[in-house]
Image (cartoon, rainbow, N blue to C red):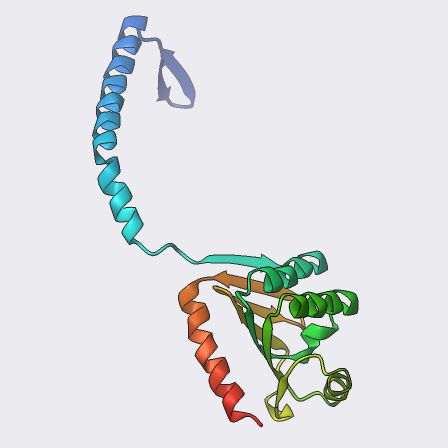
Length: 188
């Protein structure tokens, strides 16, 4: 059928079925040719695909339940080491979950390097419990965000508007680790 518009009315002309069938055969022939051509190119395309570095995976979390999932990732996918730089408010989000995280981190022998903005209350509590080594950044640099590097991932945690962005990219994660290490060495 062919739609023709004259003025504001529509008129349709019907093509004979043989014309429609011939058109379908032509398209089918072209599709088969393209399919055969693509099948020949697949090995070359796969080889090229293998040489290209995969894109970063970025995930966004905004619910307390999803924060628990991210903390579980810290423990299960850290590769034995976690670097954290930022706000100590991330430890206040859920005391039970943070305690679970700390216990599992210890049980799995995961080294945690925490560089936090000065917080006298947390500093006294942490020293009393001796949970992990924390180095403190003077309060004039305070910020409500934390950056956590673990495994091949980097998490950015906004504590004001609770959100976590997790970037799965080895290059980005490896960029942050020496920065964390340098800050760690320079702080008392």
